[in-house]
Length: 98
Length: 392
Image (tube, chains in turn green, red):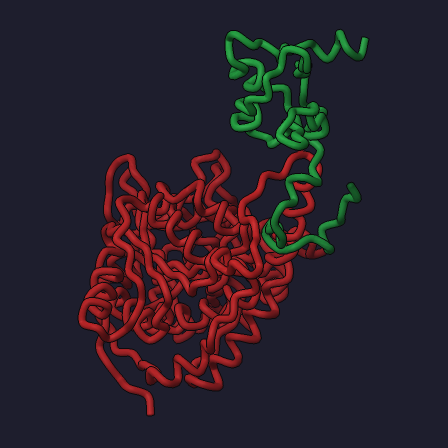
């Protein structure tokens, strides 16, 4: 995202349009990454309901993965995934990235 | 035709607010400012104006309501004093950081402890770096005039503004003064056309978004620029007000200063007392002068240095002490303003009138006496300030 100087900014820190949170990449804050086992997933969409960052990707009513540009790794999806399903587990970013 | 009336400072400020007829007033009562919103609420209750009057449960809530209201694009006012201003503290910075043109009638009163309800400037001076424009009034007439100008100034530069009077001395002292007509005030302030409103669903905005290391500095720089460049706007609006009322307003006001050898710098009601003392001294052939600072924020450093540079000895009168081991806040500002002169006057600091201690002509005479001794080569005391009218 291009950063602006003080002369080009809207007054008082205002944001003059809606939906701009999408432009702000917060995935870098994450230390734990959700990993889904699509074999186990029953597509109940409970995780999609609970995700505070709208980072559960859904196509045709099926979970396809996560928006890792915005997922902060809070783990709510893994916590809310029904106990009998347990399709999502949290994995340390360090393990994934090495 | 101007209407000549007898009014207290509080009545004058409430009357100005009635004529301004703001969209929203949110306030919580506190001595000695209580009457301002009390009288104003009567105007609302009597149907004289259509302001939305919000009785908040605290000053913190009052300022919060003002911020919300101003963010919605409403012309917004409030009033407070002392501890009330203290309780508004964090919200003062939010109002200025969000660039909301809120107008506050602030009645100067000492901060606790010890608890006290009388005048000094410790409350307003404590808020001197909160990003608010600050205007001090010498009397009820100025309080009224400043309130009307404040609306224009705030909405022009998009910074909040506090207009102050001295608790009880001005707020409760009755004076004769002139009022403008309702139409004249209405014409002068004009209609407020906010650039943005949080209630405008056609143009959605976010107010108060978080800034991290990437943007906080830029937004602050922008706010600083608004204060840095506010002076010409304040001057211009003061001149325009003079055309309307016949009463001219500038950032500062010199009295017998052009050829003065010794001079006092003061703010607020004490200026009136000092003016009489200057007249007395002039009658005796002593070249005494006086500088009133009307606009304290933004601080008119260059203008002050220009008019004080020829004076030999100056006493800066501070109606509050910084309790910082270096005297009062006005003193520090004046020293900084004079620093860039090649030949600098000798400057002494007087702390006076704390907690409403009466500051009479005798005390001011003593200050000029001391200035004469210093001007004649007398030694300065080795302490941060002189303390006027305190029992040893």
